[in-house]
Length: 398
Image (cartoon, helix red, strand yellow):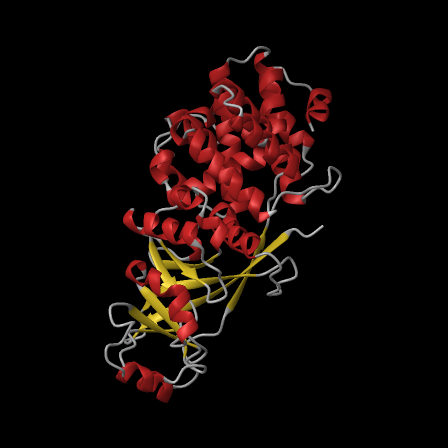
């Protein structure tokens, strides 16, 4: 079982060597660039970038350049992504058809941004991609494979686009590219491709499909919320995704249900479809991701302790403890600092106190769970004995 994800990144810079964006590249579970299915590669990059690493850590306020395959453009997945953060690159090997032409025109009209990857002056390239030129903002050229003297041609078919020189390997090459009109640069002269390695937290593939089917069948919001409560890893990934691209959906939320209601069924369906295309879910029932097991264990332990202390906790109390558990896991597993979470969510004082100072019954439950995770049953007992919890009950909770 592979518990790490891999993603490659290389900066794109302007003439003064200020970073304006990063191109992200697919890597498989071994860190290799082996692409058998372009749609899977694109979806995998997006899932790793937005669901697991998070946009703040990956590219911040810069642009993210993502290689995009044709079939993905025929879905509504791109509409779940903020147009101001992404540039979608169209590979020279892509085979556009009338539906793809229409899709790119449609997304361009909505404000989405596109780039040509490995653009060319070859007549066949113009014939294939020429109809798309009105919708393209950037044109990327491999300067090792391009006669840059062709940029002196008039009229220059790329004259309205912002040009990016790829594979710039030394200063003189940068100078030559600037002289013919290149504004942006990418290559080993500036920075090598950097391999990002990060813990991966995958859901079960069947859980993804079950939720997708429920949404397809127009299940009620009650059913959807209950299913998300059972699928803790999906809840964590959804939170990270929303923090990456739609922080307004999680601002001030008090429960998982509130977050799901704000997102809406259609966006949830497209997000789950992205997971399906990425093939990121674990398919074997007995193939457990250790980070996913840990996350599920923490949430289940906290809910179990809540039930032992309060006997019949209200739905609100269960929602509170579930939110505390989820926020703690986002900090511990996805490296989102607690103060950054609070700046978005603005939790009520009871939840903030529970997470920061471990006070109140919810805070004691959280603190006791941390003790139990480290094997300190006596420490957990000391924290909870005033609520009538016995050592035997603590052993039953883990």
